[in-house]
Image (cartoon, rainbow, N blue to C red; front, side, top):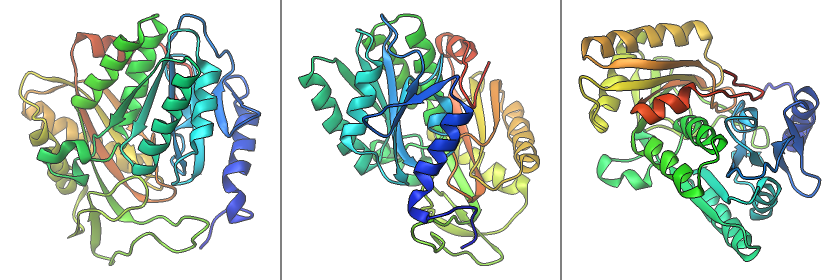
Length: 331
C-alpha cells in the first residue's frame, strides 16, 4: 500500500483538521461529536438538511456543506457509518425550528444509525423526516429497486432539497423534493482498478489487465460482473443504455447528467465519456439541461467513473439552478 498518510487509523481526524483549516469560512466542527456544520447554523425558519456516512468519498460529504446544499454532515471512519450520537448532535446544531431532513444512502449501518438518531431527535421535540437514496442500478434489479444502494445521485438530492430548504419551505415539501429526485435518478458505475482502505492495506477486489469491474459501488465493492476492457465509447454506450431503460427515460425528457470520477480518473477521460453521453441522448431526443462532469462522490483512489441521469420537471430545473456556496460546489 502506497499512500500519503501517517497512522492509518488517524486519517479521518487528520483530514478533518486540514479541511476545517482551509474552509473555515464555510464550516465548523462540533466540539461534542465528529460532525461538520455550516458556520451560520442554525438558521431560524429553515429546514435543516443533514447527511453523513463513511469517509473516503471526498468531496462528498463535507465538501457540500454550505448555503443551498447541506447544513451538517456526521463523519464516519473510512467507508463506515457515523454513530447515532454524531447524527443526533448534527441535527440539533442545525435545527432552526422547522425540523430536520435526513438524506442518506441505502446502507444497513447508515439506515440503522440515522434511524436511532431520528428517535433521539423526536425525544427532544425535533421533527425529523428522512429520504433514503437508491439510485444505483448496478446493485439490484428494477423490481427490487428499494434495495439498491445510494451513490452519486445523492448529490442531486443535496442540491435540490438544499435549494428548496433555502426558500423557507416546510419539512414535508423539502422531503417531497428529495423523494422526487430519488424516484427520477439512476446511476451506473464501472472501474478499471480497485481502492485500498488504509486500515486494511489490501485492494478491495482484483482485476486482470484486460478486465473492468462493471456495476461497482462507492465503497470499493466488486461490481455485478467482470467484463473485457473496451473503448470509452463502448463502455459509455453500454452504461447509458442500461440507465435509460431502467426508469425509463424517453424522447422529449429533459435531464441532468453527472459523469462522476471515482477517485483516480483524469478529468480528460471524464469529458471523453460525457461527449459520448451527449451524442447518445441527442440521438434519442433527450435534452441535457444541466451537465456535471468531475469527481463529486469518490471511493478513495478507485479508477473508474459513473453515469447518472435525472429526469427533470420545472421545479427541479429551478432548484438545480438556484445559488449554492459550499467548499466544493458553487453557482
